Amino acid sequence: MWFVFAILSAVFAALTSILAKVGIEGVNSNLATAIRTLVVVLMAWLMVFITNAQGGLSSISKKSWLFLILSGLATGASWLCYYKALQMGEASKVVPIDKLSVVITLILAFVFLHEQFTIKSIIGCILIGAGTLLMVL
Image (cartoon, rainbow, N blue to C red; front, side):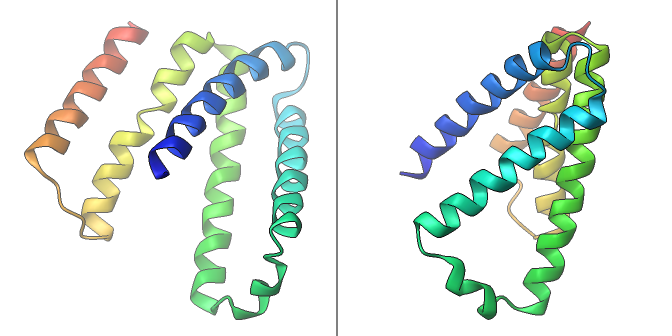
């Protein structure tokens, strides 16, 4: 089932880029990011209440709170930069560069989470990097 959700994530991410590129025209990128974020926050809390997950708030550890907050800050910084880049550049060039996050994530997972870096993942990183360069040049 995780694969279905991953595919849906990719489809919605693609739609996000195209819809944002059209919607951001003539709008300050920071304001556009704030509007998008508000919609995401409302949607996320709606899902919490629909699934009756709000009771789990009290059982979240301090470590989890810290890392979720740091993740939120990183997401906010990413979105602000992404919208500014999308406003200034072509979606067909901005999006592939943004997806270099896959390569960076694999490297960080290896260094900090001690996940396995296989020959397959090394080749994948090289191919993603080369493909990104090919698309943006």
